[in-house]
Image 1 (spheres, rainbow over the protein chains, first blue to last red):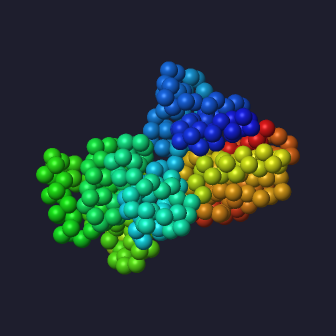
Image 2: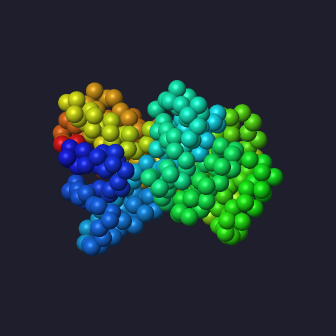
Image 3: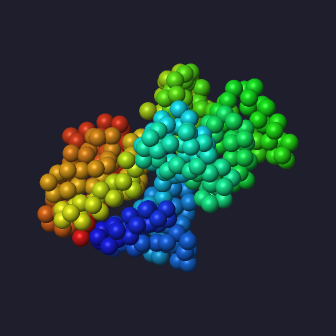
Length: 244
Length: 105
């Protein structure tokens, strides 16, 4: 790999842009591919690999290439700068997410409570107008206050973000769905909201709840089909890992 | 520590004047612990960041990467249960992996 290629890949990552490095394994020749292009066979294969977030070997233009997908970090938007958010922000960062915490209440969203986390003191709809959610985004609503959570959930439902979760009991969640339903969202849309949030691992403390949320986000991201999910669910319930 | 962090470590090291090689998982079969696209960046002095397996073949990869820094040549390494060398390196999970090692030049 050329130094210039390494810098270009790192620059793309820092700018939040996806890029693919194609390497001809036989010769070591490399090409950087902008995933927005798609004119040649190689460029189309690279764009496909970036879309599904999987580096892979591909035959294109008569040669065998390794497509090294360098996607920007996943995006986690947390509504409510609460205790669970302090821990979720830290563990999600370790799992490769760029984390932003959105809460207009300055006493909550204080840099002392959230060192090294991007804090927004705006209301959720203002924050998302500035930095929208995308297909690599997750939205976690923890404020437990409909004034904050509901507009954020409504904004998320209008995007292709891969995970939407909301803190609250079954009763709270039913009331929340009724409110969002009254705003015109149908059952097919509302089922995208995970509530009560997190995998059912019996979490009690804020840290355990944060783990259950990150686990559910991971399941949605990596195992989003019925069979896989049932395996993951079984694993979560029994501690037994059938596929190791 | 995701893949971007590992590439940034490699970038930082080259800017600091270190010789660096990069190893990348290209193909996997069976229950390989790290998917294609996983990286390990290695410095001439042996310091490394990242992983290409659950730790079973890292030792050998780091050695291969230091060879690559010395001779400037790319390497293509295969590990699997049917491979005697790999068996000694201990890819006990039963999977097979292929790894591309290249210098940063």
